[in-house]
Amino acid sequence: MCKVQGPDGYLYEPVWINPQDATARGIRDGDIVKIYNERGAILGGARVTERIIPGAVSQDHGARHDPIAPELDRGGSNNIISPRGLVSRNCLGVVTSGFLVEIERVDLAELRDNYPEAFKREYNPASGLLFNAWVIDDEVTEGKKW
Image 1: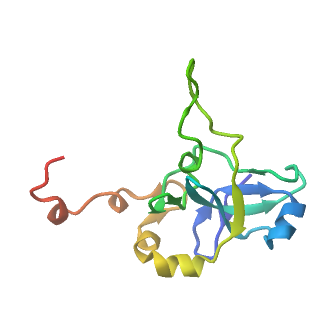
Image 2 (image 1 turned 90 degrees about the horizontal axis):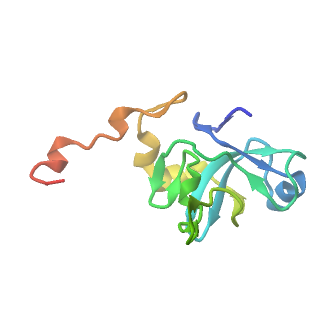
């Protein structure tokens, strides 16, 4: 399913939600939503559909990382909210699906007011943040050893 264009022009990862759950939370198709738990939060665009069971939401993992603040991501990077541990002590794997979250509609204007620098970074809808959005100014790093 295609990305969801927000009122800010950004292309958000779709988040599938059942109509029953969406109605209970005041979420409509195309709204920008926050999926969160105790580990952090990610944004996405709501896709209200019967194709997801009540009580569950789904957002593809592996999206691009576009942090607004620590533990708050605009690009849909589910690693922020997935469990940190390994699958078991005998298996080197991570849990990238099947974990608990909550979902709610967000006010993008309020987020933009609270985090203006994050919303000013240069962005390409096809590939995400541009290189210069990640480069640190030489004046800031001068004299520091990495």
